[in-house]
Image 1 (cartoon, rainbow, N blue to C red):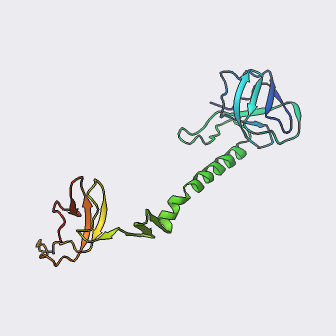
Image 2 (tube, rainbow, N blue to C red):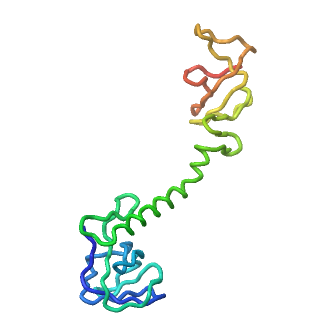
Image 3 (cartoon, rainbow, N blue to C red):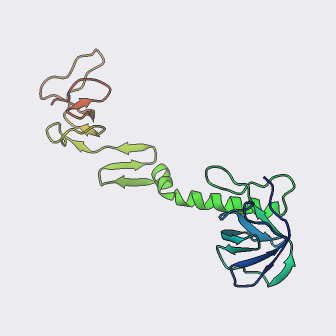
Length: 197
């Protein structure tokens, strides 16, 4: 769907009201579409459509007061994040592309806590620590592990693990290993063997 540009509009500096002449906005544009005065390159989100000749912007118009000028309403957006997507024949597409990049950048900034996890060092609940490419698990003896609950992960410092020949270490001689929890018991990671010391 191409931009909607039928008729002309009047706008007032500092006002959110837009008045159209020869515009038929009802059924053709919706709230959240983007509005601009052609050639200005400043896009405003539409807050509401009052009728075929009146709409309300989500922020006050910052340009100079104008009467009977050409405008554009952007109606094409990406399906998930609603980034503007200009199509053939649209006007002021460079400013729309700029708006898309600004929206993407804002979304990336919102992901900055994830960036801290991936690139820096972060502690989650004081026990799981991620630093660069390494993860430090909560550490305990087998006896000190919390009550089993599905999906827990830890390192048991005295768990009896298996050697390369498939023999488990002897009682009291566990060198430790990663353990995972089912709803009822802690197991050596990757095995069905209950963790013991």
